[in-house]
Length: 286
Image 1 (cartoon, one colour):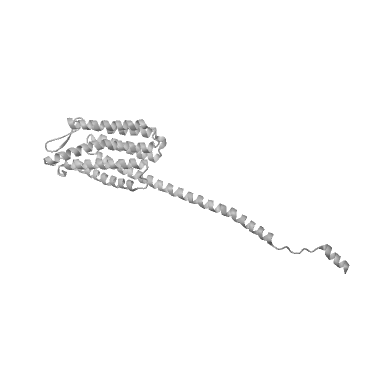
Image 2 (cartoon, rainbow, N blue to C red):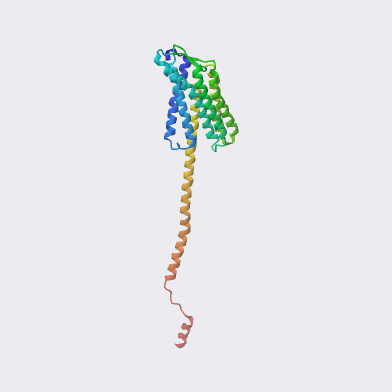
């Protein structure tokens, strides 16, 4: 319950709530947007969906931690399991989003298989940790405590983030300067959060919030850029259509006028010509 939490946990829970609300709004805007069928927006929707699930599990875990009663035990266990599960899924979704942006031609199929293998290993280790208490344990008072092998739970997401750095280096030619700044921040913030998570509980929710804000600004900028390019393309097409309509007008109209003038001249009655010989003959006769 909130009575048992110190100010750091309260701050982290507030960050998780903000991340949940922000990601929910972004996910809805992506689902209702005109570009929802594109590959990049589908991966961004998947990423924000994972942020929502992670934030919801983190909030539920903090609210149920230390709450008395046997009925709290099962929901707290489920919340802790989902918190660890969605942390790995969130790192996987971030890597897929980066690959979709930096490698649109899907040249790195082996890297995607490696990410899927790491995600499967993360889930398998989490299931084993539930049985042996490697990552965390819950005492009789429903209090959460880290296990001896807690650091292993952060190992797989960290490996995914390191693969993201490899993608940024290898596909640097496909990214602009702004893209480099955004995605290096996209990778650096979670890595810093993982390091701090070893010493401060639930600090990853703050890192998730900062990453969500960064992606929100980045995607908003990309959307504005796309709209600007569409407007420029529409203006260019309208100009080409207008020119194509004007050019035949300037070519055909003079031809039509010339034909009308020629027809009128051909049909005009001829004036009687004055014959010089006839005039001279008439004068001699007289």
